Length: 299
Image 1: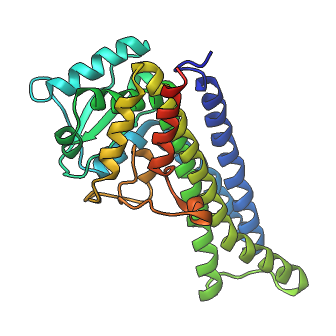
Image 2 (image 1 turned 90 degrees about the horizontal axis):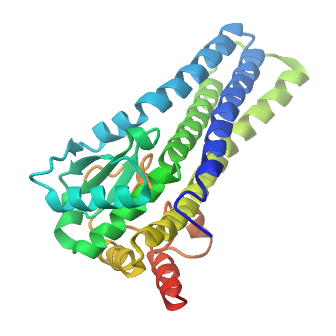
Image 3 (image 1 turned 90 degrees about the vertical axis):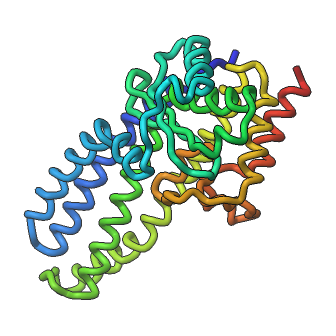
């Protein structure tokens, strides 16, 4: 039987695998660039950077996200309904109550962040609180608690760091080739390495982005299902998603690096079809609502 924690162990394994993969990948990229440019210092820097970014993403990614979106901690007196709903659902889910933060923004949205369930944070916008009723708010909070229980937010953060670093290395390599500021290997071997490097530099960020977005869409479907199981009222979340998608207001602090964290696209654009769906951070709302309402019909 599916429960809130069905995918937790899978996500923990994926998270550590991605961090190990990130470490190895950075070292390999550093070796390639240092070999091509005949500069061992690049490899040493790559190793240091890989270790540093793993540590940094584990301990400080949530603080960076909160700062980026100008979130402020919520107090119980001012946001009693939010606090009460989160506390009750946390007890029902068997999770420690997360810290609550507010973003002053009329666009309705929410997300969860933090490295584990004991250091979790749920963030909602003032716009979300203004348009949702009690059942809808509980549906959204249950969705975010599901991300916490499943360790989705940490997995997503690691994927972002990995994809971001690959894009950074790609940009560095291409710029170096254009400027020609570093001494590279000559001859046929150097030419082959150059071709391999350019192909990798062009395709790697694209592939990493597609992987990141695919993981994001899958985790949203799973969090919807887990949230519905937690509240035992899928209609609440379905109605909330409908209201959120019907508000075509992008968030003032919308950022492509963190867009996948939110319950709905913070850029308020999702009307895509076909191959365009590959570049969406979230599944189409109609598909999410259909999945929730169809589960209701079969109960």
